[in-house]
Length: 402
Ligand SMILES: *Cc1c(COP(=O)(O)O)cnc(C)c1O
Image (cartoon, rainbow, N blue to C red; front, side, top):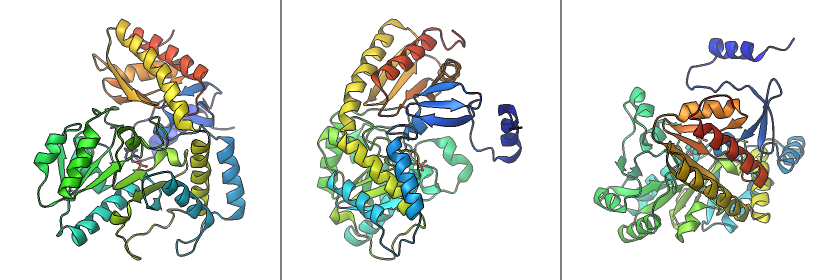
């Protein structure tokens, strides 16, 4: 007999490191905007990964690419050329403001690569400047350097001493960046919209002001688009919303629709690596880059960003009405298909659990907030369905059941 859900959970408790918490859901299958548990119960997925699933669970385009590539060539050393890697490189560069790309496996690693570029650029072009200005509440991944760059104290405290070279300022405050700039500063490193920090959308003046300051001071502007990139905000890349061009960008999550693939891209002047400076065993291998190529081609050829903008209007309209009528809701914020609903009290977990019981997966991104990040290809009907469930759950204060 196959183990039951409870037996699998017992195995987790016995064998697995206690590094994270889990929801009571044993996922066994995914298709489009849905996943199914071991008992056949169907859930609408408004978490999407976290925000990883761009074109839907097990999209046929992706499955076919995986199968074809698996039969042809899964992996080869980066000492050799491979076609999928070069196809994806061309696609990303031709559809962004950047000149060069390098592939990695996770968001944190892409960010590491970006900061290595900045360090080297500082050494060569800015008299050894190395400090990076980062923001409070930021999330950039879980390596030692990225927890340091991030803004969450409890991710850092157990792991000191931490790498040096980061200065934190409040998000959405360009004046604070100016005050924090010294001759040691080499770069400003931000998420265009903070994701894990609770979907914090900056004022429209923020990124243009940072771009202007970086130009005046000869600093690199680095955007972490691991969450906001690949159509999530209603543009292929979020920086496009503000009409600016960063010097370096990182991608992850949605680029692979679930396979471990990430990238960092740079303008020519910031692409200072020479052979030997960086590398990765798996980064850019044929299997993952083939999937990334087909996923990104799907997003671009079907103008998924435009579809996301249309769906954002549905979300915005419904959430605005919820905010109006439900005293438990303090604010709603977001862009494209990344949204947060903030409550007047810490009911994030209760709402998340009650939604799950009602067949909807959301994420309690903060104790007092839930995040919505459904697949970008979700249908209007599915979107409305999920929002109806969520509104019902919130209006009942997160009480489980109907
Ligand atoms: C998820 C995320 C990361 C980390 O990505 P991993 O693949 O988990 O390493 C980095 N930056 C942002 C903005 C993210 O949302």
